[in-house]
Amino acid sequence: MTETRSRGAGIRSTAEDQRVRIVARAVDVFAVSGYKATPVAEVAGAAKVSPAYVFRLFDGKLGLFVAAVDDCYAQVAAALVAGVGDDGTPTERLERMTQAYIELIRDRSLIALQVHAQSACDVPEIKDAVRRGLATVVRAVADASGADPDAIQRFIAYGQLCHLVVQAGLADVDTAWARVVDHGIRHD
Amino acid sequence: MTETRSRGAGIRSTAEDQRVRIVARAVDVFAVSGYKATPVAEVAGAAKVSPAYVFRLFDGKLGLFVAAVDDCYAQVAAALVAGVGDDGTPTERLERMTQAYIELIRDRSLIALQVHAQSACDVPEIKDAVRRGLATVVRAVADASGADPDAIQRFIAYGQLCHLVVQAGLADVDTAWARVVDHGIRHD
DNA sequence: GTTGTGTGTGACTGAACAGTCACAACTGCG
DNA sequence: CGCAGTTGTGACTGTTCAGTCACACACAAC
Image 1 (cartoon, each protein chain N blue to C red):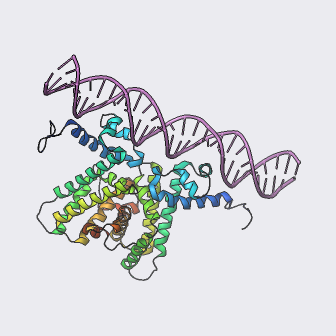
Image 2 (image 1 turned 120 degrees about the vertical axis):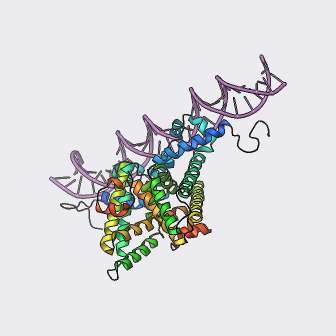
Image 3 (image 1 turned 60 degrees about the horizontal axis):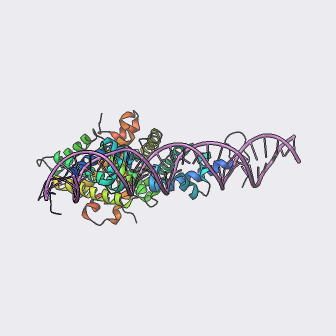
């Protein structure tokens, strides 16, 4: 099978392209209603392919969702690392990462998909994907910030708070309690 | 028990008893797989009644889920307030509330259902229930602790971190990154 | 041409599930 | 007794959706 296929590194077939295209759409589409409530046909439609083709390229709906979750966490880790240089104290770097995460809210897909993945952790493969993704993010943040464990834990907790703010749409709730929760987390 | 007397304020019919019985079971059952992935029949089975009866008592599956979420947040708020006296500084009271919340993890239902509710916020009625519940909890914590807004925000963020730890089952992950995330959050 | 390989789909099947409805069984009450 | 109200269910119905499969189309190489 060392035929016309990818010699060495880099050359990918059209199917491989479609796979990444579809995963990219899957992140956005699953972000709306989550794993169980989103039909594969909806992802297929968004990617302009037939549902049958999606089932050919992925190992069932579960395989598609897991691929989307993996991609999501990879994007998050990349965005966090990209948003920080290597100057300043660990605390300052962590602060810049926090701002980078808040910027991520603008496209709420990456946030929402994490929430849906955490919610679907009763499916073992999804729980594994969440653990993998979390490991990626925590390690990336630790490496790029050099902060101590307690500070990193607070950073993750603050991220989780952002998830709540986004999902509940607290920006649209003009009450004292809502302002307590989403203080400092500004988004359109 | 007392006969089926009921005139004037508060009709205490058997149906009302069943309603609260069923909601109690719904909290536990929905906590496993969430709104969309849990059939009403499963809740009915757990409550030892027929699915048809559940549909009679509640306004569809959505009404049942919303009732469960409301009950869940009420229980959480009650547990937090119950776990704290009125002695010590606000910071100390908040610390005791944090411990009370960690105790709640023992029965993971109340935690898991919150996650599922947040995940299902694309359904307007569920988003409203989450906002209501959050309002209840934040106000209860603010009143009972007397802490300042920033401290309360940190408390909520820490709660959200607990949700992640429980859903991902980090207690079963014996790696450095997992210990960073769940440090201080001990549960069986 | 034919043969082979990879991309892509229409048309199906089968199961799960929300919601309904007619009807049973029990309870007073006149 | 018959009548009315309330609790409770079995037996449906219609829909949605995951997954499959035979087939079509493209493009090589021979």
